[in-house]
Image (cartoon, rainbow, N blue to C red; front, side):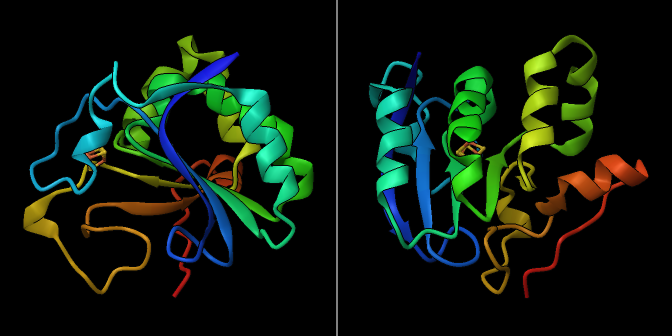
Length: 168
Ligand code: SF4
């Protein structure tokens, strides 16, 4: 299977805690005003890459704490993201997925989207919601606007209501 990506960063310290491999997926439908990654919007842009290549690349990085999948909009390629996550999960401490969808929008999709359901059960944190310039706050960790939430996915699924993760 292949995934369309804008690029990767093999060792990032700004996309979540610790040293992380970051995959920037290509293609986003939201077009948030003020988005810093406009090069990732075009669904025909970036490049197609074999998922096995990404998984092997991640396994080669010995200093990693985790994987972050950003975008673009990762959930427009849920199946491919799921394959990557399943391939590297045993080697990493935690996995973060960014999405422009809100938690509530994602929950509405779950009854008809088993791959999305499985992805949520495989990852640790979801950083969700569109970027809103009116809510921009440079003091926030790992997100750009106050409406965006860092959700502890396992805990949220367990208790049935949103559980916010505080990395500060
Ligand atoms: S969801 Fe993210 S990548 Fe997509 S337009 Fe908004 S800020 Fe940019």
